[in-house]
Amino acid sequence: MINMNVPLEKLKQTLGERVKVDYPLAPHTTFKIGGPADLYCEARTADELLQAISHARLLSVPVFILGGGSNILIGDKGVRGLVIKNLTKRIAIKGMKVQKQGAKEKKIVFVEADSGVPMNMLVRFTVEEGLAGLHMHLGLPGSVGGALYMNSKWTHPNGYVGDCVYQARVVTVTGEEKIVPQSYFHFGYDTSTIQKIKDVVISVVFALEATDKTALWAIANESITHRKNTQPQGVFTAGCTFKNLTHAQSLMAKTVNGTLSAGYLLDHAGLKGVSRGGAMISPMHANFIVNMGKATAKDVIELIELGQEKVKEQFGIKLHEEIERVGEF
Image (cartoon, rainbow, N blue to C red; front, side, top):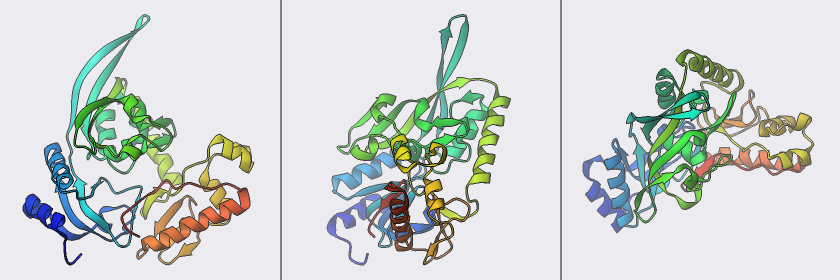
């Protein structure tokens, strides 16, 4: 971006020294792919995050909130408008209540986390406090806000981040700040309502059950071991490329033992190790695309389209992307 338009120039002046122009975004993603942001700034507190969003919206400048940078593919032409790197990091225990279940009592503890907190940090905090609900997500990349946006999941043992959300503080596209309950998000498989209405999550309160810390660490460590044994490690990737199948799709495809795994279909379509430019479908897990060092977004999209084409040919199923595309391609 050489010549900024008037709103961008005004926003740059308003945000002051902390705003950067034509700022490279690839280093801030787990894929290490993508072009620059027109404008970029960092928000280290909830107030800074809200102020930056408000200033941009007053000038009708598009805003994208960048969290941990996982699960996204930034276009080679970059992102128009303002990208705010969410570095908010507050975690606090907010309260507790006791629920009676017959003769037994269950202690529920409420933990509030800023949306910029890395999920792995929050999981470690809650496990160390002996609080169950997020423990199976040890090793989950990305931020709290991103995990709510996607309703991130894990299957060993099974659990969604949205399962233990109690309430959240959000700001709407019209600038209204409000506290909303779990039901507001309409959580589903890889989905939440904010994917459509584009609210920005500022902070989240989780309702977690007090239990034995040692037992929680055992489960958490089993989860992260399973990740390491089944997913590519030490590589640049955005995570799973495609959503898994629905039960109806699995029946249509007549998959072995009714598997819902998109990776299974990609593997049996012969796609492991296939490359385009600097990107490759992982030889370890076919639902992961890896940046081998110099991949472009174009390379990744070619592999995404190839995967969809081959699976459609062989199984009659259209795979849907789990990775979110951001910016201009």
